[in-house]
Image 1 (cartoon, protein in one colour):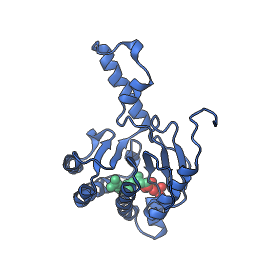
Image 2 (cartoon, helix red, strand yellow):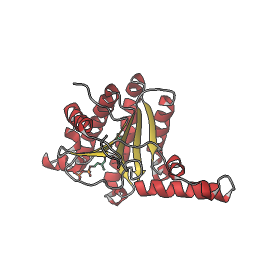
Image 3 (cartoon, helix red, strand yellow):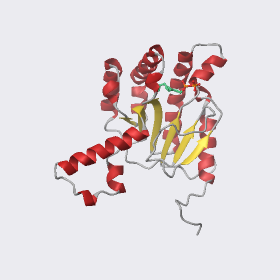
Image 4 (cartoon, protein in one colour):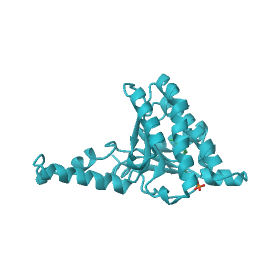
Length: 235
Ligand code: FPP
């Protein structure tokens, strides 16, 4: 790989599992299963590339509208993934964090999540955030509520509320530099709404189970060639 400007925080909307399976004449869940294999390779790639934060959109606040069998399968696959891959993530010095409202996540999956997060807590390498029952608007609303509580209890003066206050009360107070969306749709779907305000956005037709190291490199190359000005002008 030639020298590239590596983004600090990459977010990925992992879309296209269902279509990938349907194209093969298989049930949608088959695509999600292959999707977990891509999660494994993407984490390994990001770790080697020197990315600091990798945020993966696994389940949105809107995904509860799917058939119950598909929801249960995704939750089980996440637990299975964590049970199988946590030791490998540990060897790669990965820290794991979940963003989203976990109060609605099934008990077994939650137990697997807690075990993995705990095992990887003291690592110092790539920070992997899994967005689960996550929505960008929900993230901002939750931040506003946390701030309102602080004002109510006299811990914060209303005049001291700034963008930084909103930011610091999010699930993940880290600007996102690059958002990748697989699966051909060109929208952000309520992912990292605040954190991605200035993100470069890379859309690819490749379906998530087919997103390999080469595709990841294409996305990083796209980012590296951007000229980020944050509303300013070129010097
Ligand atoms: C989008 O494809 C994918 C999802 C809603 C689920 C993503 C979940 C995984 C990859 C599995 C587990 C994740 C981890 C972190 C281990 P889609 O079903 O919307 O596909 P479609 O647009 O083709 O229907």
